Length: 502
Image 1 (cartoon, one colour):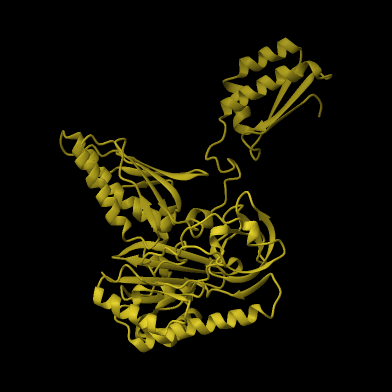
Image 2: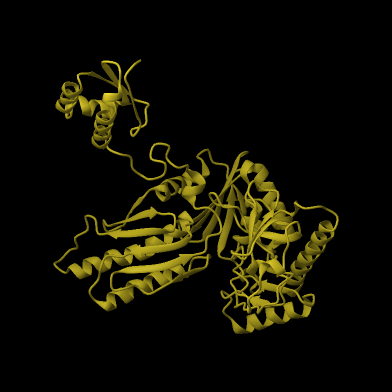
């Protein structure tokens, strides 16, 4: 089944879904009032230099200052250790490590104006991650004006084609600059490739000219919105069509495609059916599934996702699956094989980044552990985001990392629970009831009135009037006071108030 891009565009939000072999594999969302800043280029002003962290905070006209590490500032002498990069990845990987110790205080000063690009979106309480390694993505190439290097996408496997593309780029790139050739360039004509290079070089020249005319902080170049980025970065030869449900969006993406990638223009369709486009393609259901903590597996097992501050843990459970025979190891192997593929699918769909720990069910046979790991590795090759993983341990654990570029689906779509403050649980009525009893014992002798009033959540009060009725009566006898319990449905389950007068 051909891969397709499905676009749902409204006045307030654009959503783009990549469907591969009939399954939703990636989802991108952008709200007009809260557009992302990754890829934007700014003339920034250094606010603070932190020698202990070898970093600086830079004002880039955002709510929070951006973070610029010494290794991301391009005016340093360093070894450029760029591998043959995946030109489809955006933003591109890190430029490499500094070859010698450099003190940031010797290179950047407070109040200095610097040219920077947003490498990672602001996340939570952190500001944007900035870099001085500017990268300008085009349709066929990514231009790196500050690095002298030519890289070819690893997904272009033909050595003959790689040599052809490298030769074209080497002959046409300005001295001292670099390009990464993207996968979509495979088989492209020289005219189209060179034209794309020239457009990016002209854009960089315009950015530099503008930078000389303005004061920091100032936005020099803004990345296109999600609709055009999707057409530029995701609409490849692997994608049979792009279908969009909004007429204005259809006109915009059609115009963009005809101008920059005319061979794809006929593959854009306007969706006109009454049923919402994401419902018609089963996408809404998959989004809801991607927000759930537990994901069922085909055989009856399940995955459980838990996010902590430092990492994401994925637990594999057999659930109701007990196998068809007496071989427990075979049952576990089958569940783990299903889990290996589903985990990668969910990581892509949920856009989970950072450190990830996968807890597979323990397997005694080392060959089975190797088989599960190979299945995981094969699935990870489909992921356009950089991942690194270690072999499965004897305990069934896989440690891996996935590059974090933007917020996860849960972070983007959800707010922390007001009740549990993001913990995922609240104290039980029994626990809060015991706390109230202890508080009364501490405070009762200081009260001057005969009556004690307790206001708490209705479930807590109900518990105290039933299971703890005898305890309340004992308190009244001990202190010679009358305790009045008042329940409120809208009161937080853990909050209560105790007073001796109303």
